[in-house]
Image (cartoon, rainbow, N blue to C red; front, side, top):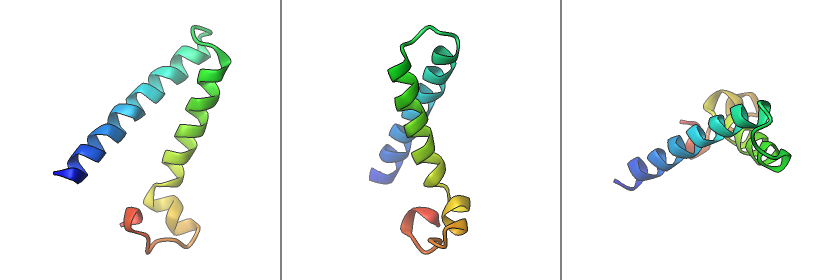
Length: 64
């Protein structure tokens, strides 16, 4: 149950992140929102199993 909750939160924050990117690119949100979105998106990309394999961290629990 805990893992499903965490995944749901991640997907929700990811959706908000995408919405923030779109808003920032259309000048509807301030630049600080764009900065936080870029950082969050970078973190999420870094957490993917593909990137973890490229960095040789395929053995981490999130990279499985």
